[in-house]
Length: 92
Image 1 (cartoon, rainbow, N blue to C red):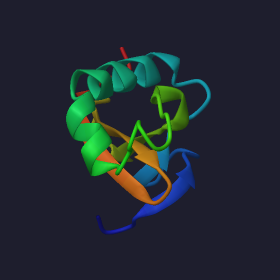
Image 2: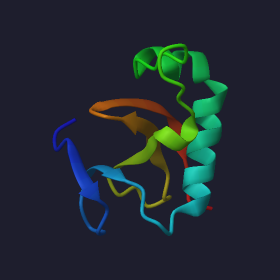
Image 3: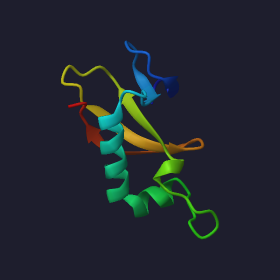
């Protein structure tokens, strides 16, 4: 990704951002997608449930923004410095 992780979204920028506190629906949809792919998410984020119990509450939701007019965003989850993108979602 050209810009990498840019922190909290402030609007008007392109890159990978943490979801805003107001992105409740997008967060819910992102976590649902992550749970649908949980085996792959655990492997890619190097989550070992036997050594350290980890759940969705330990993950940070992210979105890739390139300002599509339709509001669709590539979304994923992050833990530490590792990110896995889990699909496309919209705000509405």
